[in-house]
Length: 100
Image (cartoon, rainbow, N blue to C red; front, side):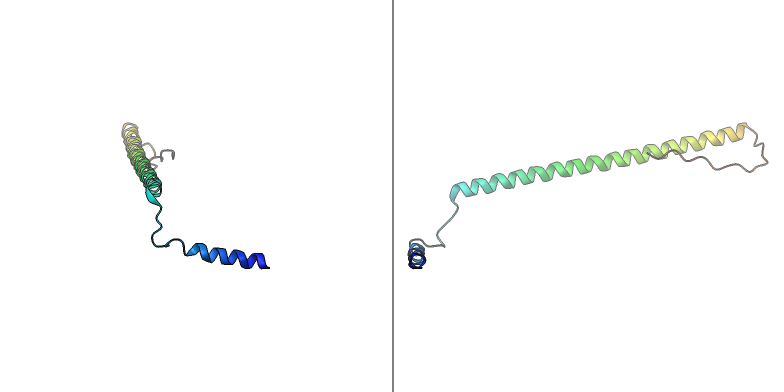
């Protein structure tokens, strides 16, 4: 038990040696914080670029699907007009293109 008392006494003596408000991380801490901040910034910029690319590809695929559906509808309409509509005017709606 006297050992613990001595350790507590030494710990309180060491506390008075420096001012806790004057302790700073210094230049090494600043450099480490700056490097971490720069890495996070670069990761965020890369993520934004990748998300934009995915959104542009989705928009392009939607436009291509719409064009394919329009061409299929035109082809079906042209075949109905050329075929003189054998079944008495009741034609089937154009087939949906397969989903991607």
